[in-house]
Image (cartoon, rainbow, N blue to C red):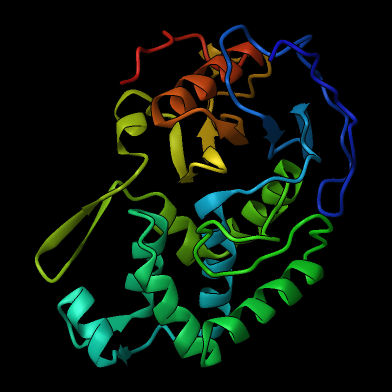
Length: 278
């Protein structure tokens, strides 16, 4: 995994211009198969590694499900659930905001099926909408087969496409708000966010999304604010720089958090300890 970072592996729609200040190699100990670090203020990638390699991305797929939910659902009322859905969630109705929170914070799969039914009538019809929206966003190396990211043949994306998708998702205030939460509550039950352990030790973590399957490995999208003290690319104190970090194919949950710290440090965006994640 100590192969060189390549700044201009590929330039996809939504990422222009890329003028990267690259690190020389992957940090020792990193386990991910691909990564990309993007300076949101400067509009440039500062590090890429196998960013155009197609692979499964697990529940990062839910970023597209969330985009369609935000664009197609009403946010001024409640949606009535069917009998199976009522049994799953213990409630008769769900707000669109609650659906976004459930899919993006604890990464609930069942709520994605609810969204697909309400928006398109069936998951297969919803997937057609997902792929059409992917084309509109310029995701040239992405194809969806389901709304959740669970393993399926012919389902893939790349770190570069996921970056473009994450930028589109975060442009919707409701999605950005949901991704900033550590936990959500529904019917008196608390659902803990999959990024909560990382939030506890990284106050600069604004939001993000995780994914994991055995085939995809552990995948992350992080919206990260680097303090001026932590970065050589510091802006004035009133305007700390922000970054999007895409990590695909880490060996597991602890390894993905460690990979994130190693990559941020390698890019000069974090000078804290590398934690022993368990």
